[in-house]
Image 1 (cartoon, rainbow, N blue to C red):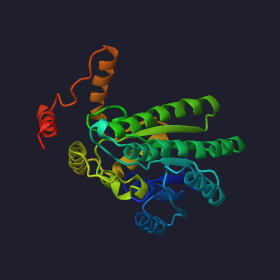
Image 2 (image 1 turned 90 degrees about the horizontal axis):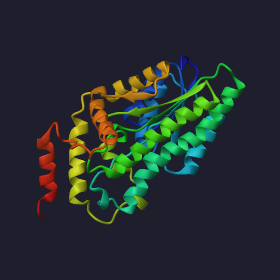
Image 3 (image 1 turned 120 degrees about the vertical axis):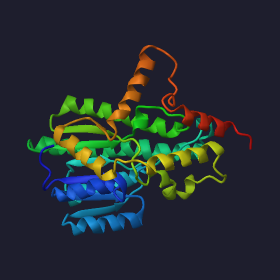
Image 4 (image 1 turned 45 degrees about the vertical axis):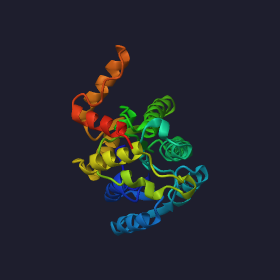
Length: 302
């Protein structure tokens, strides 16, 4: 994309983190905003800020796991602004623990948001973007899906999260290739951030009542939560920087968007594991004290 002014951006998870920062940039570029989030108070505050920047904003309280709600978002967007130019399928939740301790409700919640939320965004907005491109040779569109470095690496004690983010990478690569078959006016990217201070480690605050468990978290889940809290809160790359990386990628038509390019060395090791083939490399080989501490915690007697 080269032209942003006067275009429309649809952003999920717009109440905080990458979504809010992307909304700020889009507003400064002169775009109309469709801001969607599951947390109403955060959305209200974010919308007020973006409107104060002079942008036209359509707020929408949204649970991306609900197909009908995403379809309603699409209809509202089309009615208010027409087909969007930038769709940021960004909403996501975090969860950890040993994979066999992941309950059915855990799977349904995380898959519903992280995977099906992106799937709904793709199936709802891509057709209207293609229709706009068919009508206007000057139309430009771009879809960005938020995955994670967990979509390229499979760290232990993060099974359900890894599974969904790996799927988002696969979906995004396929979307990119499928779009290339049918149009030169719309492209796609995947965002793979590493540890960036956002609210994702506290995403359980918005877990629907029907997805709550009637038991306490397991030892592995509590350990995973603590490790995620520490890693994310200590991140030095900011959400604002990541949002700018996204817009840089839009301007350059670049598919892979990384917040921490140095972490690609671990991806290289994983690919070598696959191609050699050899058993998966210890992810803590470069910092064995972390692996030893994790094993000790998980093996400790109650």
